[in-house]
Length: 140
Image (tube, rainbow, N blue to C red; front, side, top):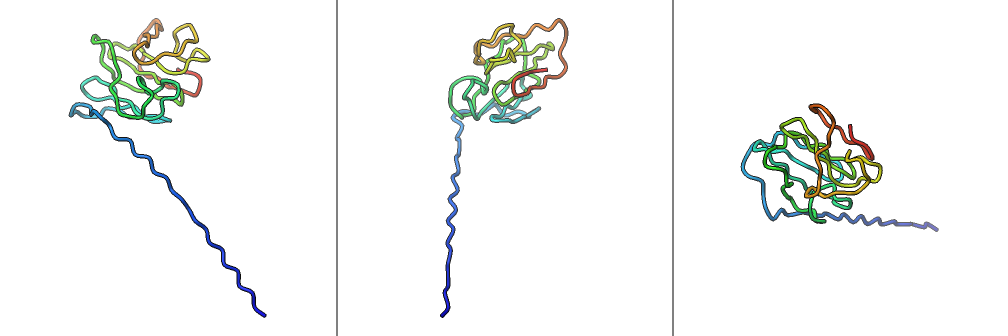
């Protein structure tokens, strides 16, 4: 007597596609970085972010669509440092603006209040910043 056993394995793949409702102006992208979300710095001094937004780390609304980050007109964005739960942007005057989760003071504002990009405050460091690095719960 011969016994034959057949095993069938089914694999399901789910793909999520995000469609941007607006696009950045035609310009050269100077930098792009990614974590749970991504941000791009465009040569015209604007920053655009998209992706996970559970802690306001992508800037504005709780959606995954591409959006421009509001920034004071006197500065232009020159660097982006997205982290898992917050983002910091470097400006043309050597300053830093951070938004998102702030449970451990990672935004550098002297408190633990979370902020969207619209309520971000410039981090006062007493000197010009040349580079920003963001970790899970800290910024350097």
